[in-house]
Image 1 (cartoon, helix red, strand yellow):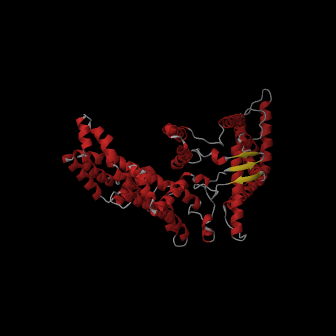
Image 2 (image 1 turned 90 degrees about the vertical axis):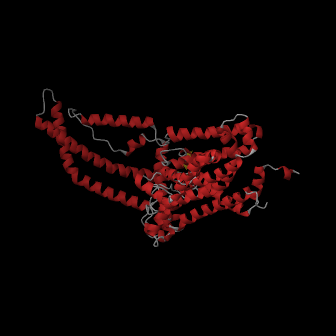
Length: 542
């Protein structure tokens, strides 16, 4: 008996999940959605948890809403969405009488987070404004003292000084230095083990070689200039003592000489301090990294997609899939994970914009007909005659910008005609129904009839069209990126395929992973779209 009283949407829901293709496609789609929402827990240079010294820290959670770390707006958008996703899931366990109120509160919280961390607050746990202000005041005070030529004695110039820098670092700033050194060393040890202890250029080795060369250069400068510095220092002290004697003044030549000697001595002291700074920092890092007793990194890779993973391109031919590097030395696996965000964002947002254009125009054209319909149909025919992909290329090339939002807007502008035609055709049929005549008889305005009644009944065919519109938007964005017209400094799968094409065939391993990921996503969306279309088709067999 219940079977005969199922609602329209319950019937569609049952038909949809009764198809194996729908289950398969939905599984793929849910996988990529969860991958996009919680990418930082799979790939990031910030540990989930770390026991350092006597305290526990949770850097990933502290940086989760930081626009200083997640410099791309899309990453911050998905992080906030990932925070709100469990709140919306919990609505399933809330009583129906309170569900609407709960969902409204959850939506308000997520929107508040978008406003706070997306527009106003730039969260950086390593930045303490009070410490930075004190450091600036100390630096200005020292600079003022050094600039006083008439002082009887000048203290040695103290900067740079690593011990002084530590005074003005908060605990997270110190922890970032230690974790960075720890991860570099760990990555180097891992690659060395993979390649049977063969010496290779990793990020750790490159940084150590750079430090060694820098130390050798500074040491040579200090050794060569030490003797002349001692002579100048004595000469400077003599002139300052002479200046401090009562009734004594320096001649103009002596004053110029004192300024010149002071500057030369200060420059030498700065070089010598830089040498000590590097030595003290390396010694401190070696001591502090031993204080890490436990560290839990993200589940797949210890790199954010924008990090320099330090892998040499020659290593890609000898390392496993997880250790591959892009041609810009960024980690490939991290870029693949975060690339799902771009594809889903482009597909969803471009589809929403195209619907916002096509649905109102389709309603107006189908409702009024006559000249309005003729004008809009001719406009659509002209619009559809333009090759969309080549128009995308032309617009991006003319505007000379590769913003992801420009690409989304242009894709949407050339994708709205399909929703227009479906809504127009359905509106033509619906406008002859009795409920439309009843609305007119009651004195309803055209806009109320259009958007209050006709829209709800005409949008059903468009819903089955949404997955295919998403596929088109994702494919076009990937195609633009593959041709080098995608957003610069991006982890788009199209951008990754372009890099793989540039390195093909020597490093074909860079080409296949993003191509396979994009294909899987499109297959999942296609299966969902096909199953949804069959479920909403009244002529299809149940």
